[in-house]
Length: 576
Image 1 (cartoon, rainbow, N blue to C red):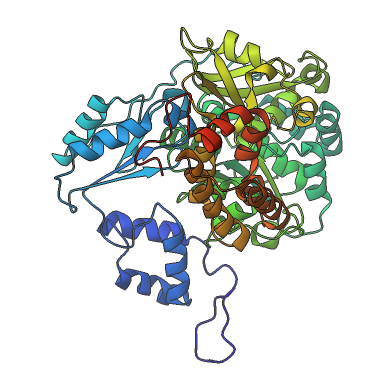
Image 2: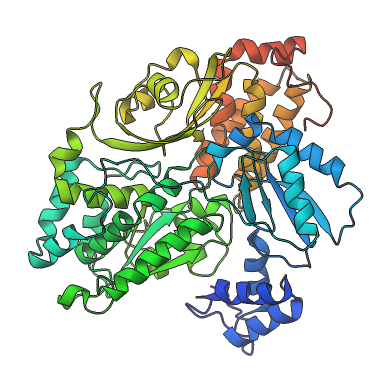
């Protein structure tokens, strides 16, 4: 909190004075198209905080504009899957096509992942996402918008497959909640979750039952349940799918978590690019209030649980749980030091459960069908179910519900249709850039927490990105590191400075500029990032390039020793 011991007359930023500030700023931006300095000053005065504090928040998030933007603001996703699917060429084509447009009319920039990896490449025009675009279709959308016609985005999900995870076969009956209210055996419910072995499915894999039990046992007058629906890492699309097809399981899981732990308020933190999912969830929440499934007196039980949606103002770092908490409190989304952990000191310093969309959905399914039902699924020594997204160089990208232990070869070849005709897989990321890259020789690795960790990678969130012949693995490492550089919050020096240093170094490698001292410097920099970065972003930042050096060393040597790129991707003007 901001204080000023030298000026007794200065406004003091008391606790919770920033609560709800994003709604206020979004309202102003809807009126003016940006945040005028005069309006920022008024927000500060109304809240009794410094102007600099409001400005610090507004300037942090990409969703807010501090000066009037162009009438048509175009962003092209340039991360991982979109990169593989030609977003670089698309960007350059649009830049050339609209090069004579006035700055007040048109702006173009690259942007981080929009969560449309299964339909890459994707663009956003005035914050409306369009996926599967070509140079022609993207230009048509922009032309229409310049004429004052805002084309509507196309929803693709439609009717989904029959999912093993849904105990209700699409009917939204909330049977588990009703049973637990009839027989409130909360400790027994925690025991079922612990027996099932359910882990957090956002990537960290922390045991769910243990987390809920810790918050239940915490002595506090106020507790919270947070659903992290801010999946923003390239390749990560499974939560978008679950919110579309199983919103009731997510909501029911949150309500149950609230009743088990004693929390009376829940918040779904969703990325602003997921407008369709936000609408679906909001409709289901409203239905639940009408049916008395949410509110003051849930199903005449005397128990209370309120649920609302918080739309993120943008930024990958908000997916880090403590940065997410800072955002919910109306502050800059800068990660907190841990410990303390959110289960004891979370939102507003109160005990807080934070799980992702998939975890809450599975919790409901497990409490409906039992721990043994969940454990009965699996193969190759693993157990449980998992939603995975497969994108990149495959014929049928998408989200699949599969048994744990399914091999990556099966996921890529059987579920996602394999690589494009005439090409072979050369590498894959098991979970977006944070997992690094593995070679095709490891495709028989099973989707298993321990097996993948032993191989030096991680199951993570199940964001599988496939690279086939024609991709350059050094270029892909640079693309991943550049993503982290762009999304670093800048709070800690190792990440802020180290990410830029890594981008500079790898860019030079792709241009044939290599110094003998680079590899030793890379190792030192990687060690520093892993040991001293505050959050996971900085800690896993070296993973893409370190994995490529480990598994694709001949390709690296071709670049740095012989100035050759077998894929024909590098050594081109503008590669930086």
